[in-house]
Length: 112
Image (cartoon, rainbow, N blue to C red; front, side, top):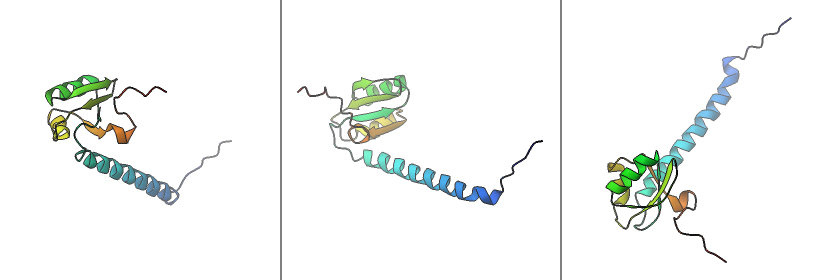
């Protein structure tokens, strides 16, 4: 004896609305963070998100310094005012302010 449970489309409507709202909030937040990165002061650490080889190549082409790197996040810094724009022009996939995004500044931790 098997029972078959069918979920009506109207029962899924609230879940779809919630999923849409969550994706809208995440997309809006990401767009805001990316836009604010263009206003980052020169000399701050930036996180270049993407494959390591592509990120390092973009940083080198944009005349930046690599501070730390792993598979998908590379921390960089430059004193150029247009460094974020140059990174994107050089092929960076996503650039975020590392100090605001996760506290990464590329500096050695302070010893007590």
